[in-house]
Length: 187
Image (cartoon, rainbow, N blue to C red; front, side, top):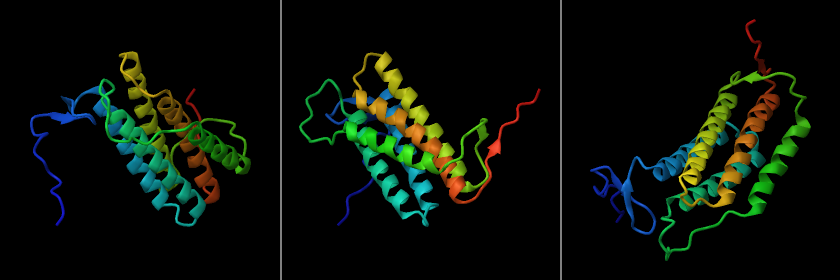
């Protein structure tokens, strides 16, 4: 027998952090991990477009796993001693993003102008994921500025991930032989 997905506990605009603390669904912490969840969904969509690139799909699945880790970290009440074991991010997770960026950049032509998102649905989706990642990062910075605890590696990971997603968008276009759309400012 499966469990019910609905609990009705959030019907009045409240939810619980890991640790049991009730907070408003509009709290910055909930917004932050909800945005990480949205980002995870977009990365899943990007990977769905990359069936011909199994190594990148595997790496994107690893990123999705790390985003669940980020979400769990953000969903914890920093004031409570949590009894359940929450996975951690490691410096090597950030280093893996950097290595992937460097590998993709080796294939790419030098970027000589700003580029507009577009040209192929996979490229555009990677850019959407990048934008959502930046929003998640801004929300996490907001938590930090409000003196709420956030693991330092969470900010570093999200910052590097947005860089990765930008390079990924260019790499996808390059692999698909899609010409980048250069931004030509109106003068």
